[in-house]
Length: 188
Image (cartoon, rainbow, N blue to C red):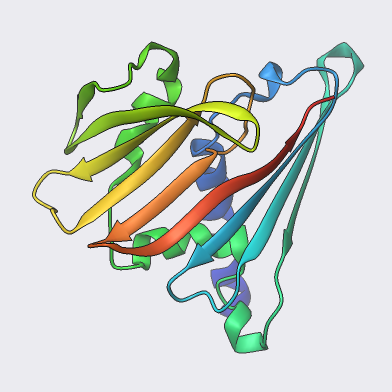
């Protein structure tokens, strides 16, 4: 039974990961682009590192390497990095509908600093244009209608292809319950 649950979880995780992809593989140039994120959470005992390398090969082919690095006791590694982050965001008490943000992620190039954008179930306000790990980004805040205690800070890459979002920070009140921040980005 445990194996079956693991397989179902991994299938769900794969669907989730593709759904949260900010950049398409075809946007990456030939050569290797590497990205690393630090993941932290209220219930994660230590920061974890998620690393992704996208290698553009000749003839439009790609090679992708994904790794997670964490240290801790067996019980502490139960929500290991990327493998647990999808579930963690949904179970961290925030219970936010992050799917509504996909529209913004896909249309980020038309967003303007200082503007608010209505989404199904909430509102997104673009706060600033900044750099995260050397990548030019728009950073804003999403609040869900009727859920004043929870919010999501989201960074959207503008200057370079970043496979996952450069910044995802989930708040309950003023407490950060989960964050995923791009810490390194190298271009070919």
